[in-house]
Length: 391
Image (cartoon, rainbow, N blue to C red; front, side):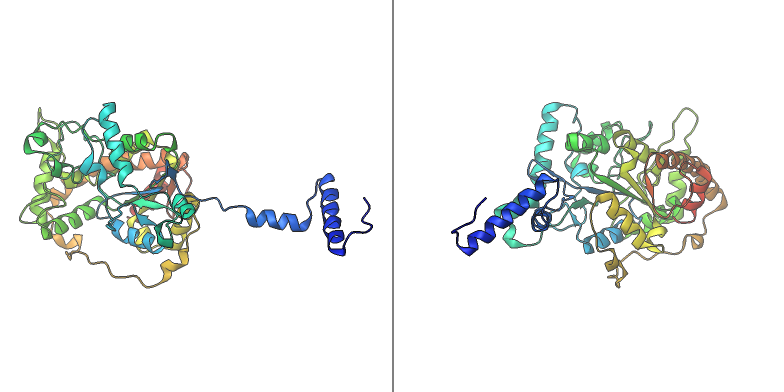
């Protein structure tokens, strides 16, 4: 190529083009072009956008009274917001608005429309159109409703007479509650339908607490708010409520056991089994309560960050926390529970805890995460030691 007679600036431009062409012929890219391509490459977003709506990528399923509020506040500090656009921690969409027959296609479509309507618009769409007034958008949103974990079919013989499924009973008549069989609610199956082909995307966090300690916290909290978090637990004392509930759970000749709402909330293994029928074990991350409160929160944050494919400023968790008000109550050891009552509890939960441990063992072999666990996946005894010393 001849550059004779061209102005000097054109000579330089054509020379650069010729150099780039030669580099590409040998499978290389000129340094300036490579840098431009790197700058132009957009960062892959972890946001779960479906049909222009931002779906929750994280579900903190429960359990209630296992420090889910503290966990939610920490995540809010890290930029993960609740899916409740009013700013409340708990949306309660599934238990408040769920039709009882979502197998009916027309009913499900109505529910799906209501679900989509309350979700925020996808931030990517807002950014492209200059919407939201230029405010920063969350990378992902989360659902923090702790009754979701237990919102699954109840054991045969148990009906949702109390808060078994969160606020489900608040939208039903007394007649409808009396006619309920206990099989009407199946939140995991419903969520799987709502996500459709994207059902493998969300991550589910479950916080666990020693069952009796959780029940004690539940009783004192409910007593302070006029029995709005467990109605079956209403009694003059924690000991009286526990004895009444355990008698029903033990059953009688010709009558199957019946589980009150606050006891059912502590039966984690049965609930998690239902969730893992709809979602893969690798989608779950289990955190014993004290592993979070007193353990390595940075490690837990970083593990969750990896699972969400989201860079979170986990070091922010080292800053002083805002105090969370909690209902005062005596230590469990100070409750003076009668030996026979305690024996009745241990008889029931010896079996329940085995169900949970075996489920965790199988799930760990299939990719489920367990915060702070250092043992071999599938090792029931190692998992027992880890769980019982941290919840």
